[in-house]
Image (cartoon, one colour):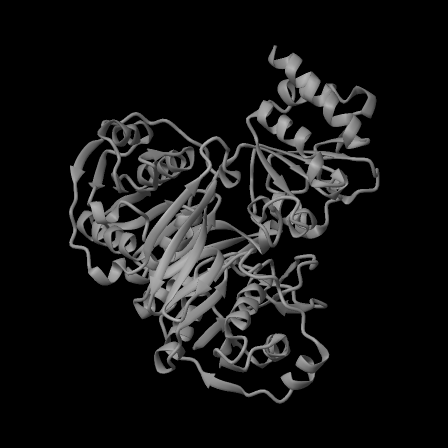
Length: 245
Length: 322
C-alpha cells in the first residue's frame, strides 16, 4: 500500500497575525513555521495504517526551499520519503493541481490531507485533487479504517456523522479524531536527515483569482464587568442591552 | 447570466443556513439585475421547495433521483455543474457547511471557477469582483479577487443573516444523466442527533473549559444551553482529555464559529481558542482569574467561580423566561 500525505507549511498556532506592504502580504518576520496541525493528524493516521510493513508513506509539499525544515519534520514523525514541488503555493487550485499531477504519475492507494490549513482555512485542496483525478473525495473525516481493499470512513456532518465506504483510490481530508498526532522521537529526527526528499518542478495552470488585501478584525470595546454576586444581571443585560436573548 | 444557489437538505428539510445562502445569493442577483435559481438534490417535498421562494428564488430545480438521495459530493458536483450550464449561471453560491466544503472545490474545478470559501460579505463589484473571507482561523480577513468567468462562493453560517424577499418559486424537475463512476463512494449510515442544535449553525453557544474540573460537572453547562436554546462547545484541553467529543472543540484546530452569543465558562482564552470564536457578535466570559486573557476580547465579564456564578445565571434565566 502506498499513501500520499499532503503537507502545508503554516505559521505556528500562537502567531500574532500581521501584514506588510499596505496589508497585501502576510508578515513572516519572526514567525515560526510548522507542519499544518491537521496535516499532522493525516500523516499520523497514514503511518498507523502502514505500520508493520503494510505500506509506505510519502509526504508532498508545494513550496519553495524554505519549507524543507517542515518537510523534514514530517519525515521525522515517520514518513518514508518526501516530494517538494518547487513553487510558491499560489492558491488551493494551483496546489491541488500540482499534487494531482504528481499522483497521476505515481500510483497511490489513497491521498490524505488535513481538513484545512490554518492560514487560509480553505478546505479546498483534498476535494480539488479528487476532482482533478476523477476519484472520490471525502472531506472532514474523523475516522478512517482500511482493510486492504475498502476504506470505511466517518465524516463529520452538522449534529452527527455519516459513515461512507469507498473501494478503490480516494482522497480524504482529516480532522481531529482520525488519529492522535505523533511526536517525533530521537531516532526519527536522526533518520529524517537522510530520508529521500525529491524536488520536482511545477506544471503551469491558469490563475483564477488571488488575495488582494488582508484586514484584521475591528478591536472590541472594553469589557463590562458584572460583580459575581450580581451574576443574575447578565441575563437582563443580554436581553435589554445586547438583545441576543 | 443568472445566479445559482445549491440548497442542501437534511432529511428532506432545509436549515436556516440554507435560507441564509438563498438570501445572500438573492442580494447578489438583485445587484446584478438577474434571476436567482435554486437547485435541490434529494427527496424534498414540494411545499418545502416552495419555501425557497420566500427568500427570493424564482425557480427551483428539483433533482429527486433515488440514487442521489444521500450526499455523494462527486455526483452532486456533476449535477450542480450541469445545472449551471443549463441555466447559464456563472455564479454559484452554497453554504460553507461540512458537505459544502467537500462540494464547492469539485464544482470549482469542473467549471474552472475561482472559489471563495468562508465568505462573510456580499461581493464587491468595484473594479472587478472581490469577496471578503475569513483567514488565519479568524485572526484576519482576506479580500479575494476572482478573475475567472465562472465563480463559486461558499458562505459562512451566520455571516449574512436570513432576509425575506417574497417571490413565487416555480419548481422544475431536473434529471441530468448520472455517471456510475460518480457514485463509487457509498453512504452506509447517517447518525444525526435530532434533539441537539448543531454547533456550526448555532446562534447561541455555551462553552466550557478546564475550569469545570471534570466531565461530571457539565450538567449545569447543558442545562444553561438547553434553557437558552444554545449549542454546547468546549476548549481543546477538554476534548483532548475526552471530557467532551472532538466535534464540540472550537478554536484554531477545532471549528471556527460566529454565533450571536458566545458564553465562555472556565476558559482562559489562549490565542488559539480566541481565533475560533472572535467573530462571535457578543462574548461573555466567566472566569475566576481576573487576569484571564479572554476578558480582553469579552463584551461582558464575570470574575468568579463558575460553580457559584452559573447556577445564579440559570436561576435568573428561569425567572426571565417565567
